[in-house]
Amino acid sequence: MAGAAVLGRLTWRLAEVAGVVAQTMRTRTLVLEIDGWSGHRAGQHVDIRLTAEDGYQAERSYSIASGPDDPRLELTVERIDDGEVSPYLVDEVRQGDSFEVRGPIGGYFAWSPDDGGPLLLVAGGSGVVPLRSMLRARPRDVPAKLIYSARTHDDLIYRDELSALGDDVLLTLTREQREGVRAGRVDEDLLRDETFAPDEDPRVFVCGPTSFVESVASALVELGHAPERIRTERFGPTGR
Amino acid sequence: MSPVSRGFRGRSRSDAPRDRVPPGQYVTDDFPVLSAGPTPHTPLDEWTFTIAGEIDEPRRWTWDELRALPSEQITKDIHCVTKWSKLDSEWEGVSVDTLLDAVDTEAEHVVAFCDGGYTTNLPLDDVTGGKAWVAFAYGGEPLDPEHGGPARLLVPHLYFWKSAKWVRGLTLRVDDEPGFWERYGYHNYGDPWREQRYWGD
Image (cartoon, rainbow over all chains, first blue to last red; front, side, top):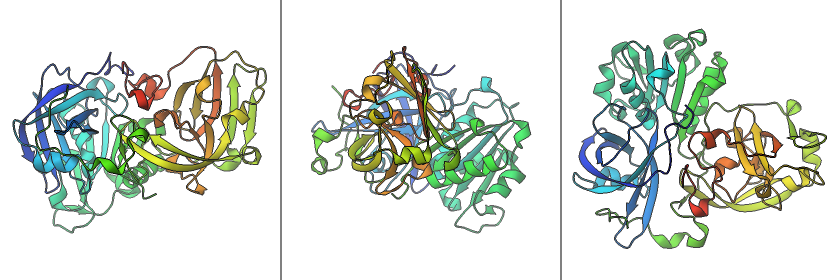
């Protein structure tokens, strides 16, 4: 199973933007049509490569947002204000544009129904993207819980889609008090009270900014979850 | 020949010397963190560093013993497979040459092993000859746990996943054995200048 998702050389393929879906003020989803795409496992990412008119190129990695059975590959990109690539993808790209993609990449922060459940997913901010792919990959008989922390209600990505999942999703807001939505950070109490216990042996995936992942993963270890069952993916700087 | 991405200009090219930035990389002043699992926290009085495998007598140092060895100040560019490069990063550590001093071995490969179960494989030639260190300080400060503290391997000429965090030792091996990311689709060697990111690159 290890590495099974990457076989032989990953070639650059041309992806055409078949659609764009605004998610929040800072994020949007690009729906891509890619010739010869071989499919992916939930949680994997792709590399993209942009080319300027003078031949200058920039590469970045983005998590795949769509489920393995969705008809098209989707990326959900968050604008980083001083970024070089994300403002282009969020603000500039339109339907019919194209850029290069290769992947899928990464075999560890990935989940397939064969891996079994229950599935315990913890997301901070745009860390929800690969976990949304896992929820889409999940058969109905696999228990799952997503804890998703965002700053405000308007920052919630996939808000309607996740709300439709009922008790399988718990949203919490760190910078806004709002009726009917939990307020506060993801801490040990929340993880103990609202998710699977260690003896239920969940598969745990945590994705978000570094400080979020550090704190959630430590809390899960404190609660008795085996470190080797906790898979993490982090983004963003640490400040030093 | 790659097609032009309509409307993409990219940032000014002049701010980073191209001969120091491998293909597909961009320069950052941050120090992003990438780890596959929770950060381990091994107390220093339980910490050891071991050289094992193809060696007559395994060598082992406690934390205090390792810190008593001669150390070096290292200023190097580092390159992460996730595309960021950081120029002139400043480290302090013990050269792997010091740890392997006068070792008699048939080994041609090493596997670094770590707290948390992470491993990575390297040719012996790539961790000797002044190319690799066990680093315990970054930017003049003790290495933060999320960056691999108390000590990480530092092999700056290869993609940074080879610079294993929370390193606890090296196994000397006659044959090559892929490590953690190397089994999950990442390149066995990982030379940033040849853009050896994934299998088959």
